Image (cartoon, rainbow, N blue to C red; front, side, top):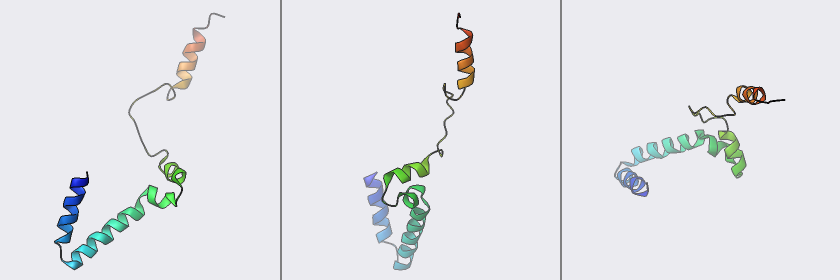
Length: 79
């Protein structure tokens, strides 16, 4: 990753000044839109909370269908 970043920096250094300013401006704008950068404000917990609920997995687990699992567990009860 560091090598890739270094290559990008080297290529940016060869750009004319106007193009470099455009690159820097675009990078700063993309950072400003990042949920972690806007929500962090110096507090890592706020950044993590900003990301909460944004991930998705196709895996179904017990908590996804908890009522079906609870019904099965109670149905197996010999009481």
